[in-house]
Amino acid sequence: MQVSTGGNFLNFGYWYDSTKNPVDAQTELCNIVGNMAHFEKATHILDVGSGFSEPAFFWKKTYPSVAITCVNINPTQLQSANTQASITGINLLNSTAVKIPISDESCDRIIALESAQHFRPIQDFISETRRILKKDGLVILAVPVLSKPSKMNIVKIGILKFTWSSEHYDIDTIKKTIEDTGLKITEIKLIGSNVYLPLAEYYIQNRQFLRSEILKRYPSYVEKILFKSMLKMKQAAVDHTIEYALIRCTK
View 1 (tube, helix red, strand yellow):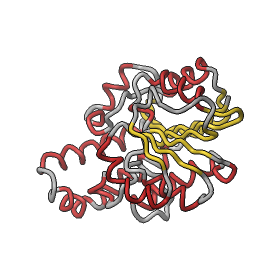
View 2 (cartoon, one colour):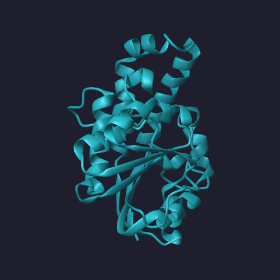
View 3 (spheres, rainbow, N blue to C red):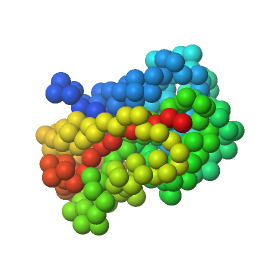
View 4 (cartoon, helix red, strand yellow):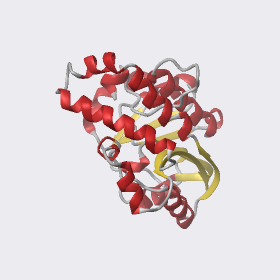
């Protein structure tokens, strides 16, 4: 993702017809999450599965008065973000997402931007969000999902499952897990048509350049797998095998 985009956002992005490149799409997805979570009213954001903390840096610039804590299990990614985090006042926490060392009811916004699909078991993460979330706070999940709870959908994904490396939760499982944990879902947006299809088309149309960049760091077979995966992503989106959900919850 870094090599292909030239940035550190690590998400699929939200694409308009006028979107020119992946970084613009990734920035827009961060902007949509911020709007959905009403960051203008927030005091303390917990970004769980924060990657290189690039979304947090974007949010801090857009909403300078808010406190942000980034939680990530990968210490190397956190270390790479350390200098900028120190300058911007963002807190970095090396922790698993299913047992977070944060006190009860201490954050009014909890975000999992394209990371919840990696959390295992996801019900433990949702339980942690309920514990940490302040009364009337908001949880936002931006998560790739299967459209239906069927083992056959895993087969249909094919090679996509190798580069979409996650637990492949289906949307109904995530909804039920949220509700069983005691959180209330207040909004769900399915935005797959603005995520998968344009991302795949961008790669297909710009493959020659992207391939040359990828080959600077990886053997050719890696790019071939990635290209086949993009084709499969496009087909899976057309077939409605996969979706991309934005879910807002509260206590």
